Length: 188
Image (cartoon, rainbow, N blue to C red; front, top):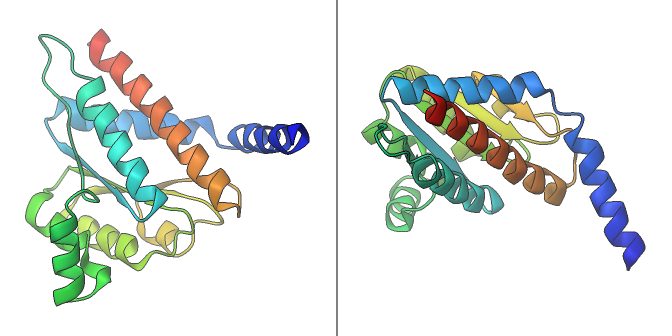
């Protein structure tokens, strides 16, 4: 059992070191610039990506709150189950996030989609909607980024085909980005 645990941690460590730090720094700056302009951050995903989007929003919206400073505006589009199921039922699942963006997103907002494979039709569709609105679309993915990498404006790809590795590292990336954004807000 110890060998399995060590192997898993070693695999995660090796993958983390393959992610270009410039991509992480770029996402931090995109979010921080949006914060300074009073723009909103919309985050979403399916399955584990849905849970990570909720967690990331919690960290960004609450964890960055600093006395005397404006609040960072972050919303998880994965959290409104009645709205998601209404769009899925009345149209199709592809519209679950994109239709929410049509109601909420504006030019200059940030749209972050998590898709381990990069092949989730509802994430890809949401990026198309975001791009038409003039929002900045950012993909967190694994594998080779799938179809979503060609639609998103920016991306951070975990170079793995192991979904648990991808999801673990996505959460780690969210924590790193949150901490860096929080530092910039506090220093401003």
